[in-house]
Image (cartoon, rainbow, N blue to C red):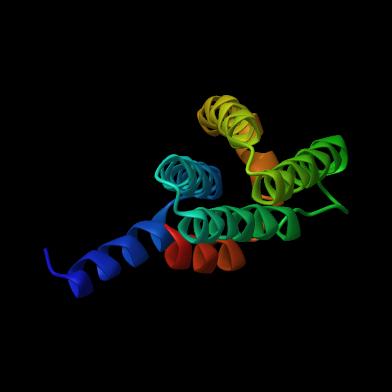
Amino acid sequence: MNAYGTDQYRQTQVTTVDKGRLIVLLYEGAIKFLREASEAQAAGDIAAKSGHINRALDIIGELSQSLNMQDGGDIAFNLKRIYQFWTDHLLKAKIVRDSPAMDDVVNMMSSLIEAWQAVCSDAEAARAAAALPQATMATTAARTI
């Protein structure tokens, strides 16, 4: 498939999924970038590592900004804290060249992906995901994944 076709497929995939699945896609994208950052660090390519971490940080920033703090209650508050922790951890990984910090964030994201998948299969949890704005997240997912 050519690059244009791939981009169009991703755009269609992102704009047609529900909010919970979109969150999972964003987490998967961030994990992909963090794994690439670890590989770049192992290869000694610090510039590539920083670039991949920056892309993961962009996704985390978008997830954080997309939270509906007014209607999201404790869930939104706790996710905001988690996203800030991840940001701090990844900034540390960039500064001190710390792969374990990246691995910690990947492990936490993987756990949350499982939780979001469970949430998305539950009708009550789908209502909680409705508090997140779709358009902003869809745009970010299309750009970053």
